[in-house]
Length: 181
Image: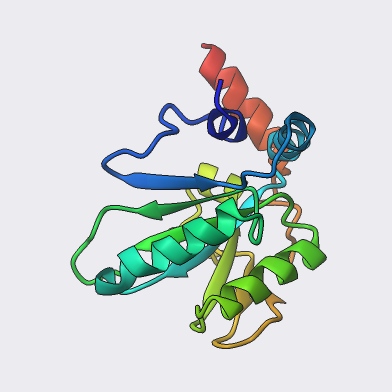
């Protein structure tokens, strides 16, 4: 089993493919991966969403990939390969725990140092899992937002521990039950 597949146990595809390309923090050891997976299982992982113009994606991805592999960002990152007319492609820079403001701030500051100065949003993986996207509900899709150039962020949803009034662990238990059927 690869470190990348251990970091993304629910994904069917963990290698570069037609939709995504991936990078992992090369300093992670087995204990790090187990701790990250425990946090993910509890619904605590998340990612900074970095949207860049399609013409700049290749160069931007090289910076994020290198910083991820050099342990300057979080445990992993991925970049979209799909270009949808009228929309900028996204890079996801993962963090271990959305409730750890120190780690989120550290990763945000590194993204700023790498030159990503635009508005950035942060979204928990569980929110993506339950298909909480912009315009799909009355709730904002992202939990946190950093204004252009800012190295601090603000919370957008009033209760980060729940999505639609449901705790992440309950959502995961329901999905695992459905997967067993």
